[in-house]
Length: 322
Image (cartoon, rainbow, N blue to C red):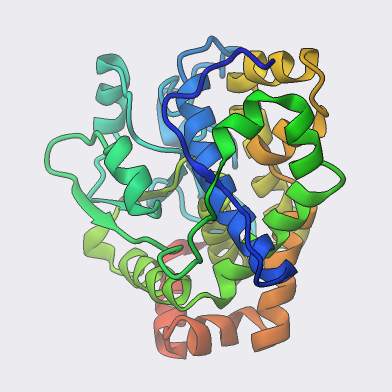
């Protein structure tokens, strides 16, 4: 039996209405277990991130080295296809901003944030409320509000029984659930509404610098970062590279959780597929975006309600000539 105890119980998908409904429920349940495993692993020691004192000192996509928020990264510094540079120090992506140490709170304060955008569900936000420097405005944007609720079985119990987890989540079921979830980042009305609000906020110079985050800073945050960088003209391979770097900063924190699960007979890919990111996940979101809207510009205008003029304003704000 897998011995790492999770702090609360959550539910796992069990839906008789069909395979697609079951996939949606699994995806919703996985959102919950990510939060639980984050709580279980957040106090474990991870390899040092390397000291990065100021955002301007970090290489593009690199963690700022704030131990309490390991996936906190500046979106600036990348070079676009037309040789402009994404301005640094304006917008950051992060994992959840809770459990922040006093020393790390000083580092967060030094970023001079105006807004913190929380992309988590109400349940996630209530369990681990944001801890922010004084004066930072908190904005809650539940992008998964319209996602179906998970079914009645207990996901905690499944994950603590590796054999049950292998049957319920193995054989590519986890990956398929994530691909479905990433498509929902594009298709859900709540995702369109809340991501639209996020990008409109990020386009207001008076509301910057800002940070947006979810629980681990890899999925909802990963799509938001990828969409913005793509709109700004950062090449596709670089956008994917930035997305995949979450593995460097999140997976080490769960080494004991993953090793314990595997030692008890669990398939290694299950916790890694849940806690990490894969190219196929982000590719699913882009495929959904292209199928529905054709281009990133159309996605922003038709899907998110951000006009061509507002998109140009975003690009003018975040891009500078080299």
